[in-house]
Length: 265
Image 1 (cartoon, rainbow, N blue to C red):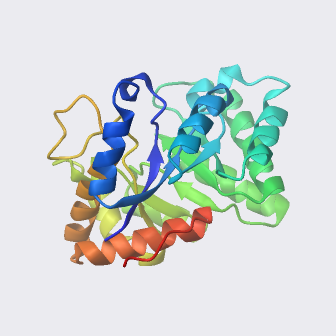
Image 2 (image 1 turned 90 degrees about the horizontal axis):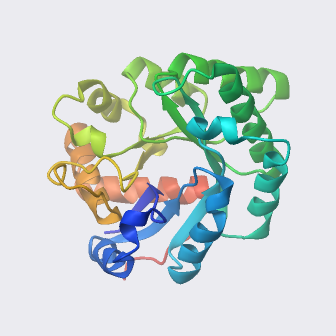
């Protein structure tokens, strides 16, 4: 059985003392590929170093909406240049809108749309962060489609929306990725969303080191091996086998991010 964790942050300080050991655990859990997200272009070199050390890791480059105020006249060109400099870059992001922790709406809109333009120019998918901003995110993507005459390819990562909101982004052609939150007891809307996503648009992730899933929720640090628990919960919610979910989500991740894996022997 093979799994792909489609959203990790392994360059964070909490992983520095024992990343090799963490890797051995994700390998034991069946995680064969990982996609490392980026919250600021300044992270690029550290993420790139990790990917060079561990060849199963591909990565993205972008600016997180909570860092939108750090955007300047050079940021777009920097993201574009970095994304073009390494074949391991498979996406632009994470980008998007976060109205839960910040109210600099216009700045976030500008940064989001600027990164959509980069992804379109480079023909790369996007990794979208959306928190308390589903309506606004939908409007931006609909506007982009109307103005540019093209769909944006990508994933709504660490999805926390209702089934109705989920359908909005499925209709826009997006993949939906579920994290450890889908295992939380009171996450009824997220669980309902996980049950209704079409099989060909389903992804799983940890968003580590955040949001450790049940039964590891009490731990301070989440890690890629725990994506297995996310897969198990999604399988339960959809009344499918773990193997079926692993196969489908792995296939979907390969299609979205252009990944390749060795067949199971």
